[in-house]
Image 1 (cartoon, one colour):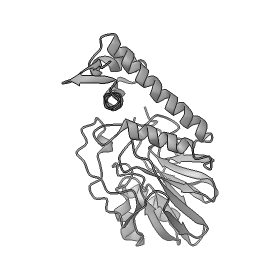
Image 2 (tube, one colour):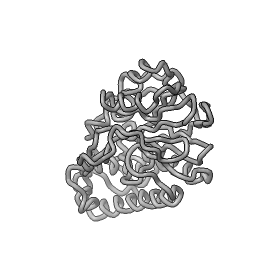
Image 3 (tube, rainbow, N blue to C red):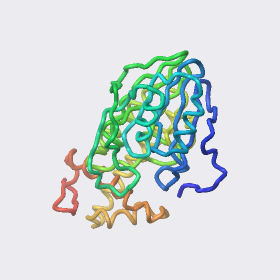
Length: 291
């Protein structure tokens, strides 16, 4: 469970790397850790804001204060879950900056996360495609499409410092929830492989949790972890547990039971992937080995 203490650096612009400052939103939860981390990129006449976060007056004021007299060249969103993009519109209204980043996406989310509903008000001025760039005073942000956690998820690379802003795709404190119908495990795994092959990224700055200083090592471990989950699921079915609600307590022993519904969504995403590969089949909510 996320820390709720008052010693977190909420509302402060914390320098975390050359050209990068972090402002932490006061929205801690079991899914957001200590809160959403918004990043301000640039230290000159123009800056960019990545994942402006929830539409919260305290956080919005903190961002405006940290921006100061600089011109905001772009407000960038990695995806449109409600803890990431809702502040984009009011911040654009204050600064006159364009919203540039992921594509709009509004779905009825049937997952367990109340904070993860999609932001229906997100309207980008420009969708940043894979490999496309935004430039400012001494900085460049390059889009890296990483679908999986959501179909519209995009990371942003900062070539000047070797940083990659990974949103919810890769986090140092937890694995991401992949929740169908929009969350897609096959796409998520392909995006992990894509990031692993990017040798130029020196450090990851996620939207939740600490910076990742050995990114390729972590991503390799994440790929292995997800493959291990696949094997666990196949073993669970082989032992006669055919419902997700039967599998989760065995697979997530020691995990806060409040997180089991979210874990079940990722198990479902794995099962759908396995089904598409012909390894499992289902009848209603029951699953069986297909071969």
